[in-house]
Amino acid sequence: MLKRLSQSFREMRTLGRGHPQFKKCQQHKGMTFDGIQIAIEPVCDRQKHHRNHPTYKIRLNGHWYRFALHRKIQGQIKQVQVTRDALGDVYITLTEDYSEVIPEPKTGKAEGFDMGIKDFLTTSDGERYTSPMFYKQNAKKLAKAQQAYSGKVKGSHNQQRARKNVARIHKKTANQRADHHWKLAIELCRDFDIMFFEDLNLRGMKRLWGKQVSDLSLGEFLQKLKHQSKKRIRSVLKIGRWSPTSKCCSVCNHKNDTLTLADRQWQCPKCDTHLDRDQNAAMNILKEGVASFGLGVVRPIVLFNRILGCSVESCSPILNSTNASA
Ligand SMILES: [Zn+2]
Image (tube, rainbow, N blue to C red; front, side, top):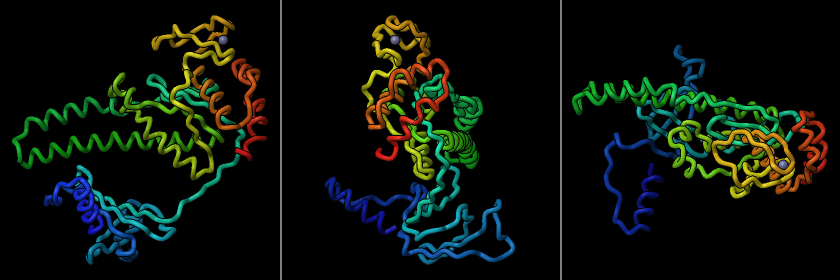
């Protein structure tokens, strides 16, 4: 707690704005404790489990608080964050100096991914992963709750209750989305050794497509995928933002400047290949990634085989042999 206070004093001083103002208890979203200050002990009594999680108690500022421990503590606790969400639920986040590693068996597969609005992810093999769009799913419920909230008397208990109903729907949406992201991230980490993504300009995309981009939460997904890839010893690599992945033909590198956003399919005027927009972009991302991260040169023939439906094995030896040096 003191740490937070001294930090805000320091920040105010650098800004030259005097000292921080007193904040009401309800305005605080959480606080941080040093790992050394706290003590954690298991609670041994009848109420030992809460939804199959063992009950523990933690000492913060000289008081003991009970909580349900969701994961085993395996290292030294460095920091404790206590946060309270809009529903009033309190969460304790323990940060420890230990990171779990679950190595997955090597698959010898590298894949490029194109992220999009219509299909969440498209792989260079043509597989598509769609997003359930949870915000859209819950939109009706949310609108109803928000309407109910707006009709309540300001400052009343009823208004408080209506506010919580709105917050509950938001929380549910976020939880559903996070759950879907984690499951997809683990699935991808099991299937592929190296994953290439495009470094997206998310803010620009938001301006173009608005809510849909926020509903997909591509940035959040990538963060989760990175976390899982670290845990499972996989690589997630990003290629530069400025390479024209959609407009170039992945077979002959011909750049089609007339391509618009509405064109989902197109015919390459130079080599006459029929291309799917997203898959073509994913293939270009794979090609660009393999080239720029020094994983050896993927010959066009390999990519051509992929288009004709050949197995990925034909390309994997090239990647595997250079894996060790990368
Ligand atoms: Zn072409």
